[in-house]
Amino acid sequence: MNDERPFRLGFLSHVASVGEPRAALRETLRLFVIAEELGLDSAWVVQHHVGAERGHLPSPFVFMAAVAERTSRIRLGAVVVTLPLEHPVRVAEDAAVADLLSGGRLEVGIGTSGHERSFTALGTDFETRRERNRASADELTDALANRPLPGGERLTPRVPGLVDRLWRATSSESGVAETARAGHGLLLARSAFTGPTRDIQPPLAESYLSTYRRAGHTRTPRIGVTRSVYPAASREQAVADLEAGARDWTKTMAADRIAPGLPAAELFARHHIIYGHISDVVAALWADRVLKHATDLLVQVQPGLPGFAKTVAALETIATEVAPALGWHPA
Image (cartoon, rainbow, N blue to C red; front, side, top):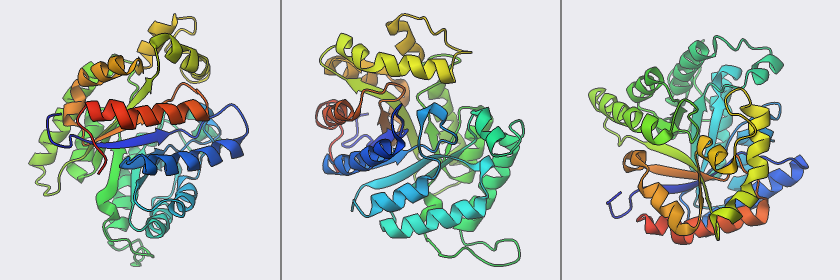
């Protein structure tokens, strides 16, 4: 991270809460406006069906239309659109409308999701999701590239350039290779339950870059890295703000992989949460080897749920103290 501006800084929200969904949606809209005011480059929401991860947003493109009316500069990311649960041409249509309303600011991330109950609820087979995701990604790319749809028609409305703003979220070597060959951006999530992200993700990023170069793409490769980042007055204060949310998320989403009774420090390590005093957070990010490959750093407070005011405070600290210490500055 030695360039003049080493990465673009984004904020990612799961639109999650244990309270009333309307409040979570309205507060997330406000967070997008605040992120733009702080000079962040992008803000992203995560699609969740049937309340997975306490999320309240199954329709990210509807949300982006609302955000587009409240912002003017910040890039708007929808991730991870669970493509095996969607019709790829319908995704292209909804994304096209949201992109036009935002003035060409949309970024679209696609993936498979590991939430089996979402597939059950939507009447879709869970075991074949990767094969369907692969085929649907090709169809989505074709539609956004203005290639003929089945029957010969083409996507309406047309959105030149959106096909170059597709991302794929994956943590497998085969998925990384597919992403690179397709020329899409690579999204590497904060969680990797098979081991520390600092060990797992650098080889994936390096493999993506080498495959991308061999594929002959002329555009600059894109690697987005999501991290749970929570600066506070102290590690103890950060634990007090995040522990209840992290334990609740563990109980509902990862009880088969993470023992619920772990001490807070070990629990946070398993969730790859970077937390504590500003100096601790900066040091941890400097030591994160995959960030040297990242074009985009997307920060979140998930799986903690510190509340709106504390989330805003953390975002302000990241934008004004943490990220500048890493070489970032507003565009």
